[in-house]
Image 1 (cartoon, rainbow, N blue to C red):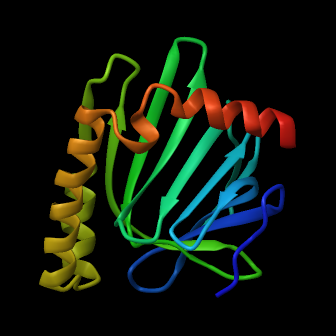
Image 2: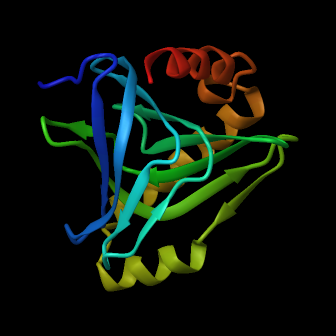
Length: 175
């Protein structure tokens, strides 16, 4: 299995269940790379949507991907605190072109004070019908919403108090 090296610049590509490209983040610096976890950092990186629209991220972020969980976490470092945007999607796959995952619409937004909200349930239900998500995927995603909620409440992994400090310092060193 290919693994990017620390300090390597990679792209992140999200796809939809039907195999169509959804979104591409053009440049992310690899901060940690193992068979189970990839942590990256980026700031003001170009993002290209499937329809060709382009935009640039506004703040530094630390990205957490795990090979065993059906979610990833983007931790955005803003003036008023850390916001986490959690995408429910497949565990990552990586090759020489990019880190890749399938985005399954559901998201959890975590605010600096620890409050969090499940987002895009309507979009999920619509896409579930349109793209015929199997019941097994639905069960996996609902289980991972629960796992993610517990991680947030327990301040585990990317939600732990020291996580951003450690990885943002490493990002500043590498960029």
